Amino acid sequence: MARTYAAHAKPAWQRLLLTREVAVIALLVVVVLYARARVPNFSGPLTLPYLLLDAAPVLLIALPMTLVIITGEIDLSVASVVGLSSVMVGLLHQHGMSIPLAAVVAVVVGVVCGAFNGFLVAYVGLPSLAVTIGTLALYRGIAVGLLGTKAVTDFPDRWTSLATDRIGDTQLPLVVIPIVVLAVGFAVLLHFSTFGRGIFDIGLNRETAHFSGVDVARTKLLLFVMSGAVAAFAGIFYTLRYGSSRGDNATGLELQVVAAVLLGGVSIFGGRGALHGVVAGVLLIGVISSALRLQDVTVNVINIIIGLLLIASVMSTSVLGWVATLRPPGSSTKGQLGSSSAPERVDATSRKEER
Image (cartoon, rainbow, N blue to C red; front, top):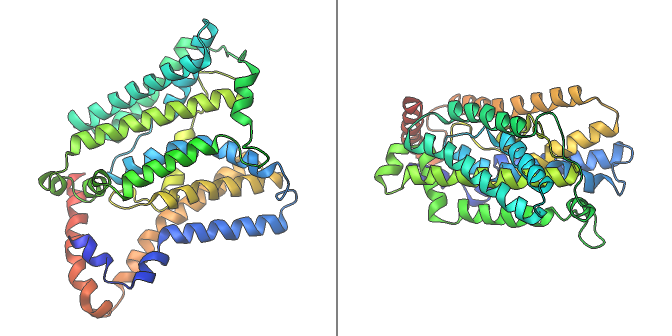
């Protein structure tokens, strides 16, 4: 396997520490330390709970989105699924259904939305970018059509409080528990299972993955189903956290999710990424946004800063690749990198040809 051979051409400590994911984690630590020292009230008791509550929907959706993007696909309909599940919870509760049962129905709707995306991408063979742009509009249109311009806000206090309650006497909100459970589950699935190795293989070269025994279509279908289900769960949390069910809830959230995933080191071309980098990327955006809001920076300026950070993050990969090409021949580790990079170029060429 060319990718494995190239990866092991470096010492173990370099493979573990000199990575994009560790760089994002280090940057997160630096930003937190700077904010605690220089930003007024950042060390206050309310900052961490609200930071985590604000980041929770993005963090939840980013977990399955990481796996989808590693296969070389993308799901832009997630925010519309959030809105649709929010409307389902509101409407069903308005018609007398209990919140837990309405939440189950909303998750089922999310699974159906994800399965529809996955079927069109995996079995019909349509590009995921085009499919999910279409279903972004479709699901959002259904959500707004079901509830119109109205909002359902009469949720029981015990459920809305549950969305913002904390774990015991800590500053951690309860939503951290499902986030940790899902993060561990997706990490095991991606990094420690045969299914996860198939995801990376698909992202590197779909045809090679197919001939090596990976069921490419079924893998993609399952990933889109997971993406829809988790987005629906995020919609339930979003609804209860703000106590409002609206068809336009979470509009534009998909861009924040994709930005966080790419910032966390996942390649938009597929075949590369790690969940700990994505979690760090989401938290980094959350910390920067929180610190800037405490300094009375407007939302528009925050979006500009986050956008520039994302562009710099994506460009850094290309710049580092360009710098690597400037090395004189034979300067790689005892010539191993030179011999192993050829198959990687074949993989990259294959990916371009597939697109």
